[in-house]
Length: 140
Image 1 (tube, rainbow, N blue to C red):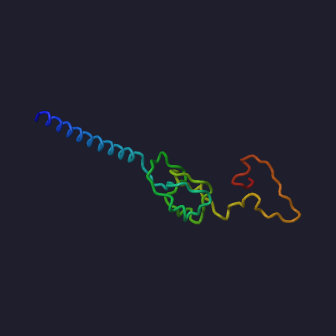
Image 2 (image 1 turned 60 degrees about the vertical axis):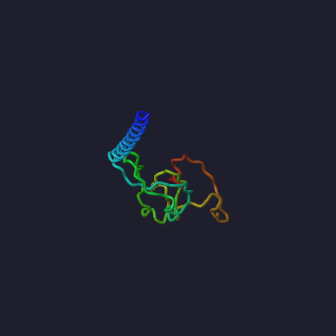
């Protein structure tokens, strides 16, 4: 009976030790893999951020995350100082890297359709154009 109990205890200790060694090996391997990819700090959205949200409100909805250089989006921000005073031009999704191109100066925002005052005697006209000619709602 003692041999059986001793065998079970030894098996449990070996299994626990093996599990500990395996977990530590995988954790160290993951750290080494991230180091080899030159990690960079970047801001990432923690929650959905609707279009038109001021940068002052965006600050509470983002966090700094390390990402490999290979997946860094061009124009990604590591702080919101570069876009201070701006607002989001599009909806930002959770997990999305915060990019300078997703912000716009509120002074540059065009009024919503139908909100432009048309002087008396003039008409509002709609002209169909290719998407390449109407970048950002203005004519190019």
